[in-house]
Amino acid sequence: MTLHRLAAQGYATAADAYEKGRPDYPRGAIALLRDTLRIDAASTVLDLGAGTGKLTRLLVPTGARLIALEPVEGMRRKLSQMVPSATVVDGVAEAIPLPEASVDAATAAQSFHWFHGDLALAEIHRVLRPRGRLALLWNVRDERVDWVARISRILDGHGRDAPLHRLGAWRRCFSETRLFAPLGEHELTHAQELDEGGLLERVASISYIAALPLQERYAVLNEVRELVTSHPELAGKSVYHFPYRTLVASYERR
View 1 (cartoon, one colour):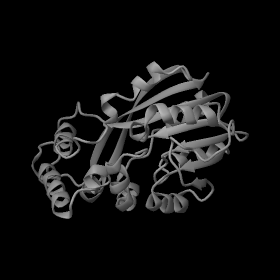
View 2 (view 1 turned 90 degrees about the vertical axis):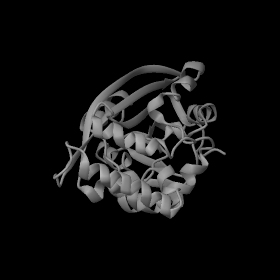
View 3 (view 1 turned 135 degrees about the vertical axis):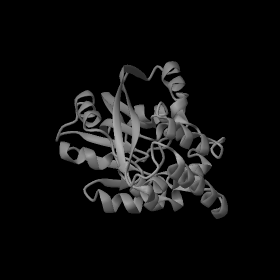
View 4 (view 1 turned 60 degrees about the horizontal axis):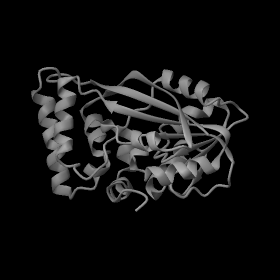
């Protein structure tokens, strides 16, 4: 399958939770994208696996023409609502429904680890213009913080079949390809302000949690709720600052 079964199944029912629970990206990351990918009002930018447009909407101020590719219908509906100026397209990164050399830059935020890397890179290379550039972004839970590490342990017990971006397996595709040359990697800090409901939405938005049977999903959310009420850094608080390490990796088409 070109899109992992768990992603398709989970995200089909989790668009609202994704929109409410997922963080945006830090200003520094957007400035880095604009400069590294050379995005301006004359550019056409393809956002791959765009979800509900968490990244897409942050690129609107560049004035670029934005094409958002998303395979899950529920996500596309929410994306169209949230970023009406973008052209929303049904499709996957392994079979992009665009002509050759039709975009100046491509982005994949919180999505590349779901792609079949070799096929996706060949397609991205095809649709990029000469010397076009690609950037991958991830908000990685900062597990140096104890309560975040504990949430990850709760989640990881249910996501054994899911590709995990924080393990870095996606880098293999780039080390083995001749289609793209690395430009560099940057890490920024980021935080998301959440109340208890928002934190639970954050957990519920994860594809393999959303795909669980209802009773199991509630059990996971109850584990997180118990952690919130018992952990010394969280107990008694009404607002939590969920920390992330935001990774930006950039490449140029050869």
